[in-house]
Length: 206
Image (tube, rainbow, N blue to C red; front, side, top):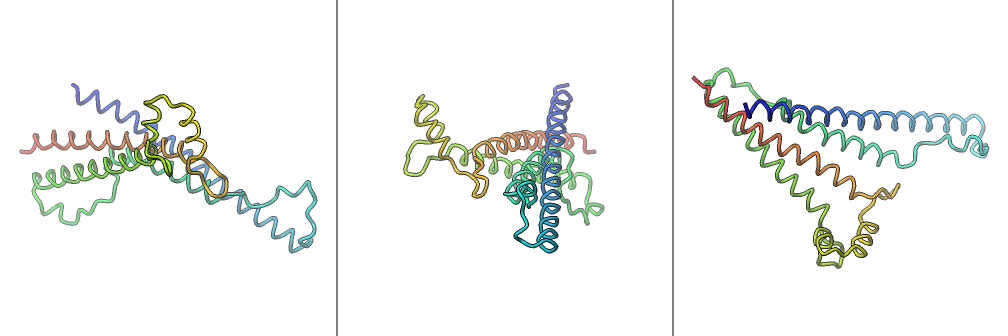
């Protein structure tokens, strides 16, 4: 059946994306632990040996520069990567205190309504990410997409070089927006699939 084939494909993509997002969490944990260890060792050295003791061989023992930014982006990637799988598995927070008092038909209607709301939310999130990627540069009326379509490669390269960047590490944010957009596009597809799944479930209500 078409539904079964689509379900297998979506499950595969969502599962692997969620597993990839786990790398983001491991990165955040590693960076945080190494930064804390470096901070504790540096403080201990300053206390025992004085702040003037800083030989070149030990100058690297410090908190990781830009730790907050690295953790922020790593956790953000993990979150975006997990959203499609969480939506597919219905792992979002659900308040079902009155579920046992409702009929099967009523509960499935509520599930369908929840899937539709999630689809709308994912669409709004997707379009917002799209805007962050293709928004016009400051003092420029043309969007990034218009520059790409017109083949203005010189201006396009200049735009990419002057895009927003993080404050400490000066990481270009455009690739991060693009990665988040891929995750959100899959979230939107999964949300539409969940609406389809709930509509099929409605047909089986006795």
